[in-house]
Length: 215
Image 1 (cartoon, helix red, strand yellow):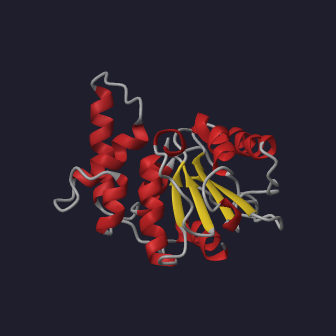
Image 2 (cartoon, helix red, strand yellow):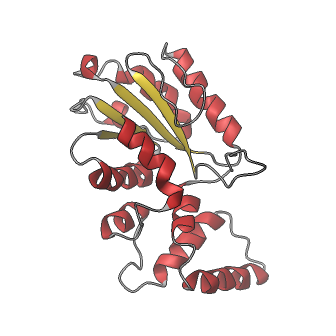
């Protein structure tokens, strides 16, 4: 966690994204390089249990007074509502304003917004819902039309039929997909982002892009 381990961490830009873990950190770096080059600083806040401490510590970083916008990005995990409640609790505890809903900015200074991944699901009776899941789930959705996804699903079904329980099926599926691409085999999410695996203009990334552009 940078605020505890890296005393050299300092704020260099007025717009910040606080990302959960290194995968999200590098994913955001390459996304921002596409959408808004050189205007946003990405900080890794660590695991989901570290957010409150990180938010408290961020006020002590050099140049904090220059911060205009903060966006928090974390996985929904098994329950999107629980993830949102956790973000709001961390913000409230440290005296920050609280957005009414995901991807919506407050009018305070600094402006605050948050996103939970994989993001908005499909419309259900005209209403968007927030599904459970992770960054890996979002990445799989971006490449869901690739013909080898069928092969990946068959492989994972075969693995599980041999009495092997996949404790992280979203990670297994993503890395099985990357393993099926000669140029991407063995890459982590951040490396895959740099290599251009994800279509940054994909429909599933639209809310993510809109938040970045509105920062």
